[in-house]
Structure formats: structure tokens, C-alpha cells
Amino acid sequence: MFKKIRERRIHFTILAFFTGLMLGINFSFLASANESPHKYLDYFHKVYQILKSQYVDEPNNKDVIFGAIEGMIKSLNDPYSRLLDEKSFSSLNEMTTGKFVGVGIVITIKDSDVVVISPIDDSPAQRAGILSGDVITRVNKTLIKDKKLSDIVDMIKGLPNSRVKINIKREGQDEEMEFELERTPIKIKSVEYSLIENSNAGYVKLINFGSDTAKDMADALEFFNGKNVSRVLLDLRSNPGGLLQSAIEVSGLFIEKGQIIVSTKGRAGSGEEIVHRSERNPVYTKKLIVLVNKGSASASEILAGAIRDNKRGKLLGEKTFGKGSVQKTFNLEKDIAVAVTVAKYYTPSGELIHNKGIEPDYKVPMFDIPNDELKIFKEITSEKLMDKFVHKDTVYDEKTRKSFVEFLAAQNKKMSEKTAGYMLKKRINLYKKSSLYDLEFDSQLASGLEKINKND
Image 1 (cartoon, rainbow, N blue to C red):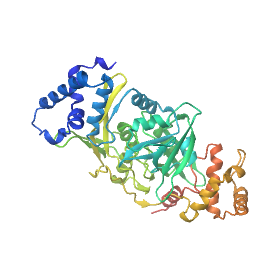
Image 2 (image 1 turned 45 degrees about the vertical axis):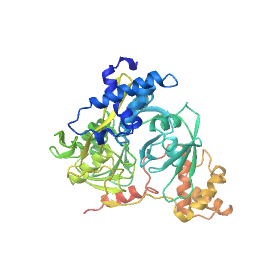
Image 3 (image 1 turned 60 degrees about the vertical axis):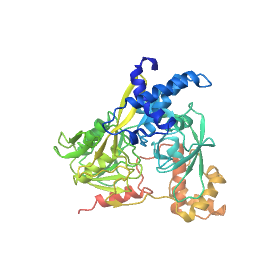
Image 4 (image 1 turned 120 degrees about the vertical axis):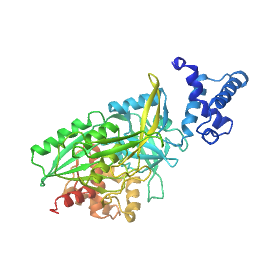
């Protein structure tokens, strides 16, 4: 398959691998802007011939060339530029179509750590309690530091109904946590929405930015308009992003026609700058609060930045992830490609949020188990006490919550009713799809609803 690529292209593509890794010379350091690459191409020819004729074992052409491409891309020190071999390309297609078999986490490499950008809604990872920002250290007991992202993904994925063990480090906790997860078919939904009970407010969760997201979001907003909803809470938490065009189209549903949504700029001095403006009248024009957290990345940050800078609404929650770069995929074959960062994007105010993130207007932490109760939580987990209390037909209500607190006390596990209720509800939801929103334990959503209901 790879033989179809012309030799000249191969030589140019893999040059940096040999010059940078085998000769110890940094191409970008030595070569000035006006210097011809022919000298380094000659290096490649020589090294390639040495390997082919003198190396003790017969080298595999594909491995040598793919390694060269990966070496060149690695020299960019950009985790978002990467080689998409057959496996990686297949994985990308799975994500594009919204169907794959795994545990339901979106991961990236940040500062040499494998970081969870977000767990996918209603996935094994989310139901088990894996959170945005968790650092994965081991997969099936194997250390994964310094491994390629595609290899790590392959380790986590597997056959339906098989199981995988994942160890994570979580901020604020000294000990690693181990999760054993069942691999299942994962279907990524784009938009979910609902009216919030006892309130003239709508809640819409935007899960990713795909080709149909703008249409799905427009349907949700039209539904709210039909119900005379005067305020909407837009949830971008743990949304890892997606298509740039989708982010622009969704922003246009809220932003006035002609207003700037985002601008993208290519290499300095290239003159490649594109300003994207809203090309339509907004579908929804009433009160808006956007929920964000450290799992809100890329296209999510474009939308959040457009809403903030155009003073269309307020952001509430935690600082966003900080991915402000744009990738373009260049096909080398039908199922082989390279994804290359070709531009950085700027919010309407001209802010570059890459590796910085967006600070919310209202900083509100998410409810979690207090540090002074973590030890008890670990004991409850290790002793499998939840298995003794919760069954598939267990219903979460005030009576069950009080019974659970009494059950823990009988086991000499004293815990506040709030934390016990939080643990109980999460465990019960393992056996059934949870409600789209939860005002009891979702402190950010509850705070957003309180603020948006104010008249000021």
C-alpha cells in the first residue's frame, strides 16, 4: 500500500528523523529559512543506503519510514500533530462516526502525562467515576509513560465485553486508584436537552462537535423557543471538541449576524489569517449561562470564547483545558495520513488561549467527596460495602439515603449524609441511565440556575 507513494515524497518526509535522531542534528536549528534542504536530503539517502546494505538484519521498509515520519513529527513537540497509520486512522474514523468499542474516555498527552480530557457520557469510564484531569499511569499493570498515544489507545480498546484495568493518579490524592472496566460499544451522542423542572429554564448538554451538531443544537433551541423558555444553561463540561466548522455553526445559533466568532492564524509571516463571523441571525436570543470545566477543550473553547467576548452570556465553572490549535489531515494513502497543526485560533477579543485556557466569569467547583472523608470512601470501596447495599432494583430516594447512612454507621463508617447520598446515587446510576441533569449534587448547574434566575 505504502509503495504507491513516490520515492521523492518519502525522502522528503522522513528526512528529519535521520538528521535529528541518527545524526544528532536538529534540522530546525541548523537550517536557516533560506537554506536548501538538499544537504539534509543527501544525509537521508546515505543513511538509508547504509541501513539497507549494512545493518545486521534486513530492515523493514515500512517500519523505517513510519519511524522516520514519527520522528520528524515528534521534533515539533506538538502532541496534536501525529502520524495516522492504519490503526490510528481507523480509530479516527470510529470517533468521526460516533461508534467504537472501548471504555469511553478521551485522552491526550500533556506534559508527558496521559491525561483524561473527558469521560464520555453514559460510558463504563464515566459510570466508574473516572474524571477529567485524571492521569492514567498503567493499563493492565503496564506502565504507559513515554508510550505513543495510539499504542495506549490500542491497549485500552479491545473486544466487546472484555475487561481492562486502568490505574490513575488524581489531584489531591496520594494513592493511585485502580478501575476495572468492561469494554462496550460506545455511541457518542451530540446534543441532549431537557426542560428543568419547576423553572422556566432549559438545559442542553453539548457532548461533541460533529457534522450534525449544529442541526441538533438548532432543534434543541427551537424546542425551547416553542416552550417560551426564557433562559438556557448550555453545558460544555467535559466536551473535548471536534470540528472547527461545527463550532462556528453552533456559535452562530447564539451570536448576532456579523459578529466575530473566532479567527485562525497560520505560521507567522504567512499572512494566513481567517476571521470567522456569524453568517446568520441567532436562533436563541434570551438569557444564557455556559458551564465549563477543565475537560472543555478545543471547539468547546471556541464557542465559550465567542459567547464571552461578544457579551452574549456568562461562563460558570472551572478554567477550560487550553487547546487553541487547529489540525488538518493530509492523506498519504486511503487509510494513512498525517494530522498537522496548521494554525492557532484566537477568541473575538484576540486572546490566544492555547496552554492557558479560559477563566469562567463565575468560579464554582464541582461537588466531590471531601478530603477528610476520602479515607472512609476508600475503606467502603475496598470492603465492597456498596455491593452489599445496592442492587439493580434499588431506588434512590430520601428513605433509601437514610437507610444507607444507618448501614454505614453499623459498619463503623461514619460519613455525612450529603457524601453518603452522593456515593449512593452514583452507584445506583450504574444500573440505569441517570437523569440528564442533577440539581442535588451538580453544584455548578445548581449555581448556574440560581444566577440565571436572577433579574439582574
